[in-house]
Length: 156
Image 1 (tube, helix red, strand yellow):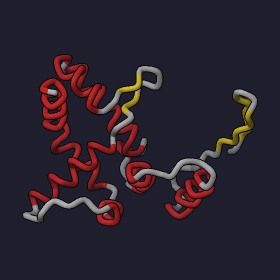
Image 2 (cartoon, helix red, strand yellow):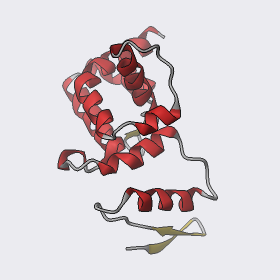
Image 3 (cartoon, rainbow, N blue to C red):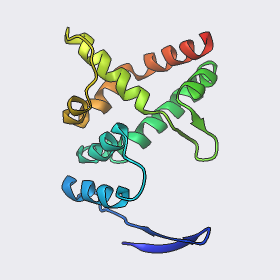
Image 4 (cartoon, rainbow, N blue to C red):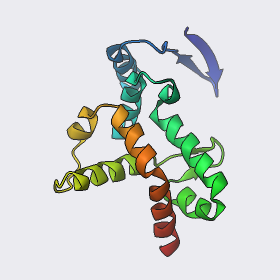
């Protein structure tokens, strides 16, 4: 259901897409909205594709899922917070991480190394993956990645 809102003298339209919409519709909305704005990132596209996964636990999409998972992990491990927050650029205002794309790149490299393939990250390869891949990789390696990120950030 679209609605209009005024913000700082500009008119904005918000479009809500129902959960069971076809991926083509979602992508088309992204294309239209983005035709006059900044280019979508690889993570934006993977996040949009993640709504295809038919599992209620992942229905929030990859971005919100990762934000929630990281938040839960850091509550249990406060010593990781500073490093992870810096590494992933935590935004206090929105309470989200601005650099979640780092996670998908690390997960892709990890996947390639496990397969014995020389790591090289191609956008087309990453977009071609089943969206469930990103959730499963995070579930398997997320806590280790947070420790690595924290260590890397703390070591400078």
